[in-house]
Length: 328
Image (cartoon, rainbow, N blue to C red; front, top):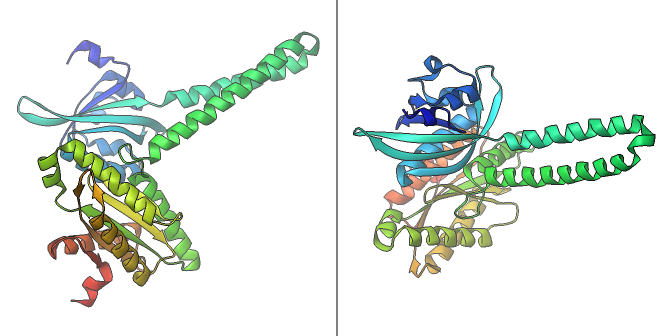
């Protein structure tokens, strides 16, 4: 491998389609504080937190397989000392010597830490200036201004990092990571108050055919149009997110089975009647309502099974997971 790549100013890792590491540069090894022998031929998920393993497995792999690339995925890696390492990940599928690989670039999010260190330094200088009032009056005012400026910069940086970490770049909707956090909050609320909630998984019918017929730019425009329809029909308390590819997901607090079925039909009908990017699209919807027996994994699985049933029954329809149990 090129010696310049070995010490590039960002971490570089090459993995197989199954996530097994085949190469990493020295910059990445220094970032995670491992030796090459520790990670070579190991699974990339072995140095991720549990939450990020789920995000990586359910979002990164499918997106790479569908589009061939992933940009700006916010992850937390685990160092050999079990310390959190916040990174932005870009990935791209490639082929070398007849073998399909995924090249990954990891950028350490050091800037935020640097800002915090600068603020702490400014505070210490202010304390020193107060000890020597006769000499520090003018400098003190200047340091106050510098501190306020850096605090404003840190606020802006934090807001931007939060936006990147929780927003889908194509549609402007919340992303899978944000949705999963909100799902767990609703599960906690359900445990304490039995407040009902439901969710919908929505898949665009024949989306590959749309892309093949009209092109990916039109496909992207359709996804943006569908996102606007879903947002306009949903309540302010609903969480509308892009699940990945042509799939969307909506979390609906305080909605039982009957209410969520009506909401899903309303959404399906509106999409069917609305032209996006000069063409009409339809969606298949799977619905599920949380129960005492459910977990975050099971409620998603139930909605996904209901979605699969909607597709099997001809698409452009809504199926609630409870209907599958009732019809057995």
